[in-house]
Image (cartoon, rainbow, N blue to C red; front, side):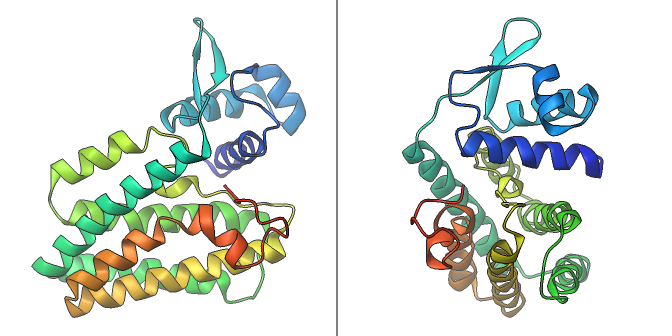
Length: 231
């Protein structure tokens, strides 16, 4: 997916999480394209991506409707992802990292460190972080060699905000969102350390906790003064 398409996906994801497009509402390509100031093509591609994520569902042959879900649904899906990714991390720690996997994960850590080194975020950083984050998670899951775990995570990813790359970043408050990504980067580093050291129980626990970074850490990091979730 191109950088422009990824940006449209992120914008729509945020608008849905904020209730700007309420559950049950039908949304049209033209209206969204005009609202976001883009052409209809990236919006069409974004609709397909968000359908796969479980945020949109088909409404007729060409239309889409915002899927109805509750915060409890989202938390349950996150818990399931945490359990499955935790299982993947534990199995990978037990079997040991190959040189190739270690290099791949180390590169994700370095890429994240470079991204955050300047001490602030710009809008292009949001797309880049999504790429780094997805690569980190996918590498851990796929490196276990377990099709069962990968398939279970794939099915869970079709639920709203359940996939690793569906974290919501408020592009209107990038100074505050920087703290969330900085913390996520630290979690990546601790997971990687546990994997390298073969600390299977620790790797599992850290990965399970990491699943909540998008939903629970806004309040802890003072991202939302009202204490509401950030998505």
